Length: 296
Image (cartoon, rainbow, N blue to C red; front, top):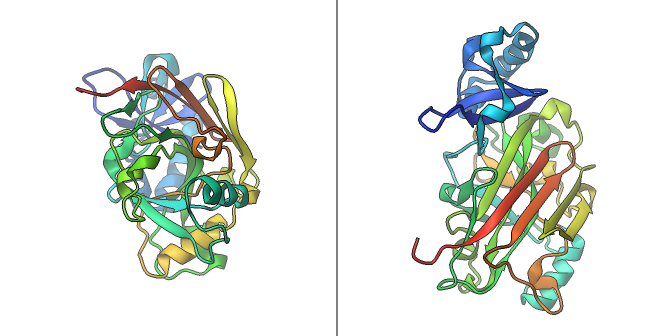
């Protein structure tokens, strides 16, 4: 299933829906949880019940896709996004040249976090504040959403804890790293465009075979495949859960391939008026303008 969080009008509450061709089927009208976190927390049985209910969904539960506004699939996660740095071979190389990171491949996943307030909905603007950064950068990533509690899980069991997958753009202010710490660089408002859907894990049995790409103003900047991750999705889940319990609805942004602005010669940075488009195969595409946020 392709699951969305949508709003039917400006005044309406956010609700859980399922994409069905040109329609969005409202899950709450089928007697199931009406929010994404509600469905995830209800467990696999609720997800299975939703799937089984779709063929008999009444017309009252169907809304034309053109008449709804998509929000981020999880507009406000309960915890920070788990970010993974330096997780593609060629990105390690470009970062070591231009960002003073280590040239050696990391022996363990490099983990940082992005606050819930970084998340923006499909189509919402990425905020460029020149008073804070002159080096705003792009990173397309596969997002993994946890479905069931994972504590000290093995690689063999890790994918069984996944609810689904989505797309995230890890926006980064490269000139805001502080003594090796990344949370200011990665964690400003609007720095995590997320969506447009969550595809349930049953439709992506192998997350390591997906093409991903990103363009700026129609020019391709990144293109790779998730097979090129240094640490695969199951390794990331096993590593994080060794010491931090992963809970339903937690999000892991699994790292970006080469082609970021900081790695180019000369370096390139996002500026107001730019448009960023990012996509992961089998999931969907995000489109985001960059705006001048000074004074907002």
